[in-house]
Image 1 (cartoon, rainbow, N blue to C red):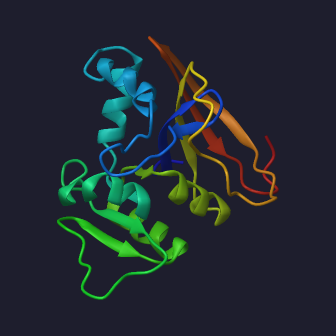
Image 2 (cartoon, rainbow, N blue to C red):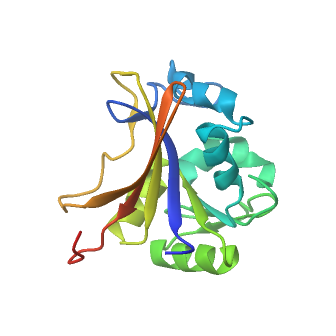
Length: 194
């Protein structure tokens, strides 16, 4: 799979991607910033630097609406001017997202547009809502989970609303670094053998 749709998320060992009470001004929730200490090494030659550079080499971004809004809409540019596809339930008249962002209400259409826009590069996914919607629709190919050795205890979970379907994953890469383990999983399609 050369040009996957790949989730990039930092997560606590107990499955949280933000602390409790995530809102504007406290975007990562209480103590949620703890999940991003590994970014201190993003400019290193080590594994965290490698993963960060890979993320910034993606050719398009799919984001959930909540993530998009909490991030201040990234002022319309997440990285390098790549197209941003914001998965949302509804679009209000006159709400035009800034810069390279556009709203999309259909999951399959969003995946199709993002793949086309990314060309020969992977598509980055941000946000629990977008990840869950893409997984349910069979459109998420890979997950790069930055697993942080902490138990947050409460907050926003990454995999809360997937429904009852069993989803098999194959670990295709594991990189250890200071305060984080970067785990890349390939999502196995239904009926696909290991």
